[in-house]
Image (cartoon, rainbow, N blue to C red):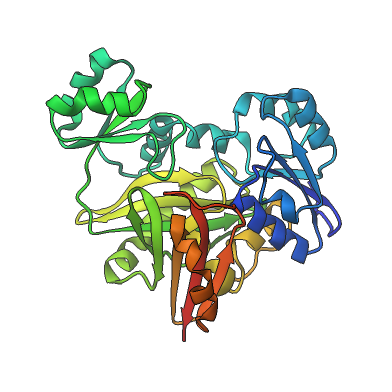
Amino acid sequence: MTMLPPGSTIGILGGGQLGKMLAIAAAEMGYRCHIYAPEENSVAAEVAAEFTCADYDDVAALSAFADSCDVITYEFENVPVAPLRVIEEGATIRPNIRALEIAQDRVEEKNFASALGGRTAKFATVTSPEDAAAALDTVGYPAILKTIRMGYDGKGQARVHSADGLSDALGQIGQQTAIAEAMVQFEAEFSVILARNAQGEIRFWDSPRNRHDGGILALSVLPAGALIEAQRQEARKLAAAAAQALDYIGVMTMEFFATAEGPLFNEMAPRVHNSGHWTIEGAVTSQFENHVRAVCDLPLGDTGLTADRVEMENLIGDAANDFAKLFADPNAKVHLYGKGAPSPGRKMGHVTRLYR
């Protein structure tokens, strides 16, 4: 694919806030966006030139969508792969479908990272209630059960502290095929966010220290501190190897635990990521702009920091109701996603604060 000029149409699979921020970045660069999502109320569609509301497995609708786009990308990793295979021959999809396949399967994801030299928590596959006990004996207690497919922001997960709690944990995840992971002793959590273009150039943003509450990202802070900075290079090496192995084009994120033994790989997201929202104000080029640059074959932008310290706070549930106070804060850049009524655990927006 040659460089796409402004005025071209970028198709975005998914209609949430990540798609919205991608569409805003693309519009500022002169591109049109066409959102494809099954939900009628799409916050991304509100800022896009076109919107197709159809199921992801509607091949006819997906094909018509693809015909209207010059390049297709996605804002979340749970888009079904099979329908995309149908349109793949006549469409340019970036990042490629292989990245989706790996990120959709927790076992394949960990095996992929391990094959590239990354270290993961000890894990075992749980295919049925009958082999769950053996899997937990392998990884040890306490452990965490996670559905192999779907699940994010703490969903599809259950902690198991002893054999007596196994049955209840399986019930919590709906008796689905799962992965049993050993609980990790870690000092901090951090992410590696990169952009890679078709020529193989890679740009990294500084890694934030991330804090999760109830499995949901609550806060990202930069600088991340000495421990994370000491482990960042090893984590970047794995992320770069993954991007190269996949011939990846776009923004990719890998999440890590900083442990006494070094960085431990947790998850991969083949898309722009919540822990990179701070880049809108906190970096010279945001993750959203660089994703657009990469998928359109434009040169990648500078990822350097614009402040000495950056904090990004997620507004979860009722926290968004304090918008008047937030907008009154001269140091707060407030992003509200327009999702309507808040509910527990729902990401309603985020606030970025820069300290120079």
